[in-house]
Image (tube, rainbow, N blue to C red; front, side, top):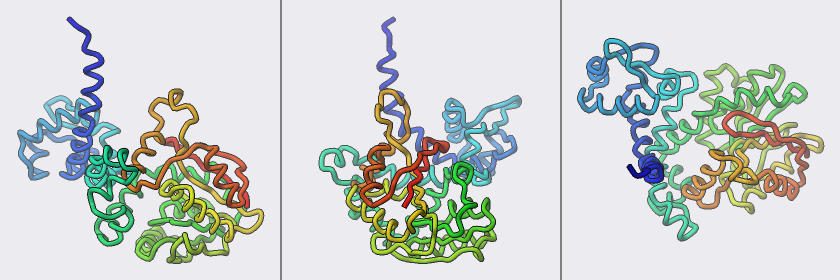
Length: 337
């Protein structure tokens, strides 16, 4: 029999989009929520989810083949540790991320060839406007994006483990969204005050989240545009997954605004994935795929190598002191003002 390895390899890549939708359906239909820390037969699960039992069985079989669920004695299904991340009950749930990746981002990736052909974002081609303009005009999508970006941030809790915030008095989170990173930092550095700086809508959502976390009394909430102004008053500033949204010129403007705010001797922490210098030596490096993701969704965004970030930082008057690794190929670039 002829070796079908190459064809099988291509088919496995062509059908990856099918798995994206299967994973999202697992979250959307409540399959993961109802199986969280319990076992149910397909029939029981179908009744609880309000879905067709025969169709659900076929979905479960696909999910089982990818180690998201497992079938035990008596035919009852349970989540695997991987599948448990699709439940909203999991403390590190990726459910909202799955829904956004299988929704708006799925549609924009369908225009990848357009993005490569023109250099313009696929998202803009599909939705008619750039990503941030569209989400600003469609608050439901903007809120869904915020929820998605809050997922998969378990590495935030490790930022205070690789950088000592106790030597600082005030941290400013620039473009901090719902304040997940700021909450992680403040919860592990009791004497620290914080400022959450972002658009008006994001700041209000952040205020609610930090209030729920019991941290709002230690925070200031400032709305604004980081291209125009970065609030002064901090001695350490955070830029988490902001610079990768922009090409070099706008990224340099953000960094210049940060440099005006950061006092001499203060620190700027840039949290981003780094593209390896030799992609062949780093198979599966997340930054390489995310770089194309940025092309598809905003055109100007890009992931960068360490040398590229060091060049940007130097141009704004910062000195890169160190790079410290976090999970999921994320890094903290420590820069001195």
